[in-house]
Image (cartoon, rainbow, N blue to C red; front, side, top):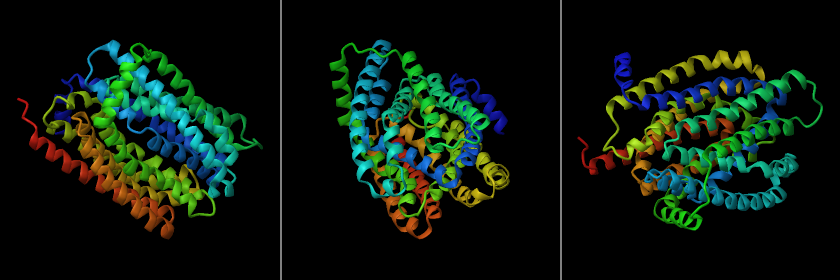
Length: 423
């Protein structure tokens, strides 16, 4: 049955975009896995946890310091059909991104000096050293949000895959040439990570070729859509995504070292691809969703079937995989992966309906759902992490994934009941 469905679906032109973006994500999976194997052995549980802790901090910062402007640009692009105006919108968003980065950098300088946990774990110098390059996190978000609205799926695939590829190559070089490195290994790995992202960011920006013509008009247009749509989504993301990113950070604050951050982060890394399938399919159909009255049953069936098969494979294979490739030091990752896998899959399916809602400008629905999810995440984090550490974080991931999916599906059903049918 699945074969017949896939055969019929191949007549849709979007299949090439789906295949391209999904391939980029699929290729990145073994790259990320092999990279994480090498990095965990090179750093050990505690330093690997510190590595993930710093990345979590900047990922959280992206949620806090975007203020809805990327989503506003997304809305402007999805309603635009003029290539020249699209370039101008990219240019205006780039200027806004630069201003957001300045605000982020100033805030993090104060955080690095005054936060007790950062100083107790000896991470102040490392954090300040990486701060000048942390704009790559904002640029990655810029690519992710704007490209789906402009249907630049190939460039989106490159922006996702190439940083993994470059980072992988550098890690291999480190593995074979610096196995006995006696310097600060954490800084070395962070440098490798940032290098790949900086190179790809420059390359992709050259491909976009943003224009700064009519800059005032384009910025005013983005501000307009931010008031109407973007800021609502931002407020929701601040609760849902922000509190989710805070999960990995909170583990550090309730532990003597960052090994628990490493275990939890590795479990999320292993289970993360489960969200790729619904996310990729919805992203490639984002522009089409804006013109549809509902998601086609065929598309939804394909998404569910492939996602459930991937979940089954993850549950069966994670045990032997972790024991063979990561060793006994990382055995806690196995149970954590069992728990977070279900939460991540539910989150991915929620994202599927999120894309449909977003394409129809349902900013308030996304905001309200995110409030519910975010508050739930915070409550369960505060209760469970002090009691169970990283296992409490894993349970929170599962519960929040379930709540997110239910909210997205509820608002999706409410929307399609109000939309006129498309024959």
